[in-house]
Length: 252
Length: 292
Image (tube, rainbow over all chains, first blue to last red; front, side):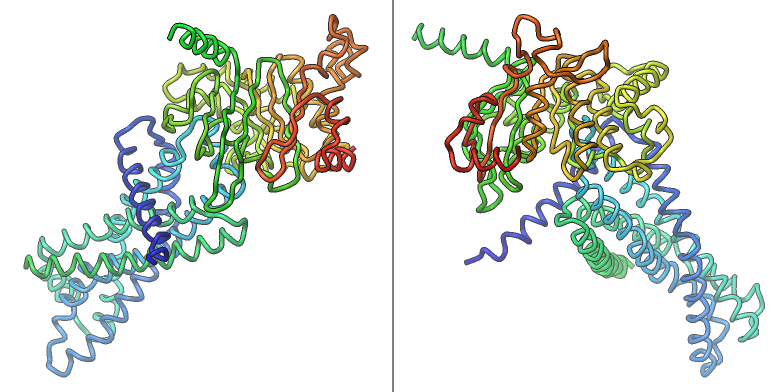
């Protein structure tokens, strides 16, 4: 009667087994430092331009829209604070995670999926290498390190985008904008703003690896795995961001 | 009981001498029985050719031999050790003593030919590290064996299908394993390249005295293994009886080559080439005649 639940429950179990093994491998030798560095370059440096572009545009848009709204109350001086809080707490981590999920969860799933269907994963196991240790753990570590770094860059670039509009369109001075932005941020916001991408990094990479490693059905299967990885990765990001925000709102 | 324990001891000794043993192995994928109660044993120096149409469980059986595929019931002994319940980590040391050629070569796309062949020498887990200069030399030797020394810096996608298989063979034999598994080594290749690949398999068998488990759908592959031997002086394959390599047994390769035929997961034939050709079984004879 409950047979329809078998598959999703088994998938969840497999996902948590993979997560457990990938986390255990962080402290268990052998460590593949070269692979971590390669992945950090691919995920971090590779995503830098698109992350900067997205966050710069977000900063511009937030400032433009908030500038119009605040003008009615004569409070355009507050725009720096609003941009800083919105970006650091929510939009910076969220937009960066969405960009990285779209770019890297799909990349990871398609790479591992292709390896799976061409028996490279089996070859790795046959040659005495644990694919989770060699492929999953380096990607997980690299994403968990690089996503917070990218988020910091995104927050800053977004605020610069906001500054352009504040300075050239609204007519705020540099010190008004940046002092407002700086003073608006509390320790709590920074922690929240960095904790989110750290956790998103784990989820995005593990979801990508999970769908990649369970690919079946040739090239069509690789395409399916890639799509599933992006969709599920993004859903997890939205769920997590809501939960973490709720926790921090309560703490506040 | 003393009689029983003696029998157990004899069986244990026999298992220790065998490279590979399947005992009543069954493998299922949901409702599909891929391998159905298969039993056989491989001794050193032996070549087993598993024939069968696509989807008859040949590759699954081969993967089960090194624990890449878990069995649902029965036991698999590798080098005398029961691997049925072994963890993945515990299997790594045993697998290091087995060479494997995967269907399409199984080469790592992101690594060069040199790095692919060096992979089993570099990634040795807890086993003793091999110095870099020795690794390079052994990679050169392995690639020289398959006549591909000029491809060191190339990536697998720059090679033809036959070359990828040859690099796969080099990677499989670079550690000089006593047992080599070949999964459809000639699938999708033209007849000339297929014969070149089988010549390399026979050469490896005769120069290193390896045992081989070959999964194939081509009867000709088994025929080469059973009837030809490598002559190191002429550096070519010759009919076994006249080479002098198999002195003492006029047909060394033939007697050491066992054919197995699989049908719907079951082992429906096991025996020599002569017995295979004389078989009256409808599936076996049809298969052999069609492939001959």
